[in-house]
Length: 245
Image 1 (tube, helix red, strand yellow):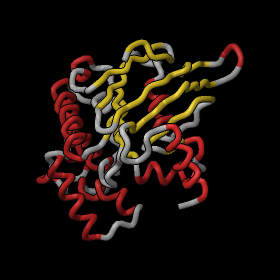
Image 2 (image 1 turned 45 degrees about the horizontal axis):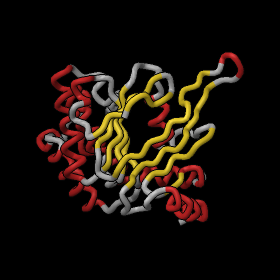
Image 3 (image 1 turned 30 degrees about the vertical axis):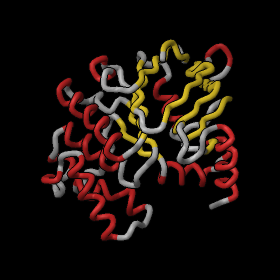
Image 4 (image 1 turned 90 degrees about the vertical axis):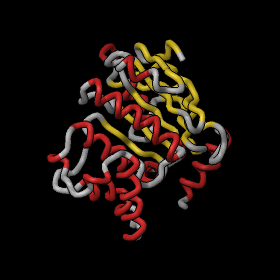
């Protein structure tokens, strides 16, 4: 572990419960703006909340309310202007780029609206990519891929490429890929945005099921009211602030 990562763990423990504790995500007085002066866009204005370990928490709000900005900050893909984000006991502000890369690789799984699968790879190969990057042994990787494809209901589609799968099936592959390295936190940004209502509901139900089966915490942004009912808790964003929890 690098010095930055060690410092991050120590500082994060002071703010959260630490690995194995009750809080997975702690956001404190988070601000993020883009641009300067009169043209500045205030994406987040003093946002604070916690996400207990093992819960599926939904973020709702209109386009431009700050959902994606918030997810990017929690996932270590962006840096706040002020405030802190603590994930699994680690204060992200104490991590250097290598520490953030390690956190995203080992502790956080991402599911995006656009699927983001590699077209020339099969479903199984796509799921295995994060483990290859982590240099997981081949046998362990193959067993994990088989288990995850079964978990998302695609055991019979392992050899198919993304272009041979439906939109819902592709999103299931992306969920399996996000779980490859056994993350503590799953972040999903409008994961059903490109799907029809029935398929979107099935994907959201799958997300809820994998939270239980894999023991992960999930933070999911969605504008679909039907899907919000599957969350343990809903946080509403409006104009960069929390209006309801």
